Image 1: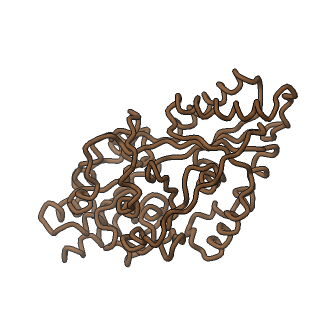
Image 2 (image 1 turned 135 degrees about the horizontal axis):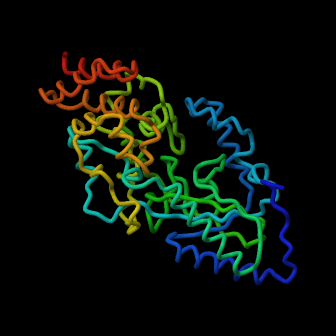
Image 3 (image 1 turned 90 degrees about the horizontal axis):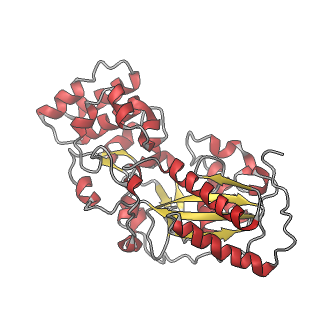
Length: 363
């Protein structure tokens, strides 16, 4: 039956064989470009409690889908019946280039884009690698059931990653690895194989609160508590509505995502760079002027952002975000001219944010 895993019929496999298989899986994953692999069970009871509390507090904003699937998100066996184990993989994404994100944040006429979105969209890349990993397992043991996920289904990837030993969830609600920092993606392979599980990592944030103090919009309302409604990543990447006026001046030049909490994290002094070609910056997005991006037509936006995670927000939200950044930029004739060029845009959403931007320059 589609979507249901049957118990594996591999009587010849002993517990020792599964332990050896687990080690082989981790080696194959490294060969496929994943930096680390861990294995965990489907028990996410504590994560479920935290999720329900977060939803009850309304911290999910317009992300209704976070509640739509009920307990399916926190109970993998409800999502895919028959799931016994989850293979969790980690892939670093911080491009191995001479890049100074903090300098960009302090250059108000430049556009700041979250480092994860500078290259190609990671979903297809990781999913294809997971498919190859499943093929390698089948070549070793014969057929078995598996299903790959990469942030595209009701899967609690961060709690799964923690239980699989990748690291701990920091006070900014992002997974931190003591050797690699926090600039990485996760992917999951649900399986019916009774593999041995790894140990969860210990929390090592201690008394540090740099991420809480640096958050531009104070979205981290307490240790391990994030109000998405105030988070710049949510505002620029997910929200399709007008951005609350009181938050606009706090966004600075951040037009897609926000990395502040990661950039100040002490553990990221050990952040491991990625040599993955797909994660290299495209279209010069790591060093580009706001005015130049604001001039892109919808056709140019769609063409240049093909294969990018940014494309999914659409041209109107792209212009909305940049209009705010231009409103926050130092007043100049070039900035005012750029904003005025979109004052009569067909989208009410764009017009409203352009008008706000012009008001910031007393126009």
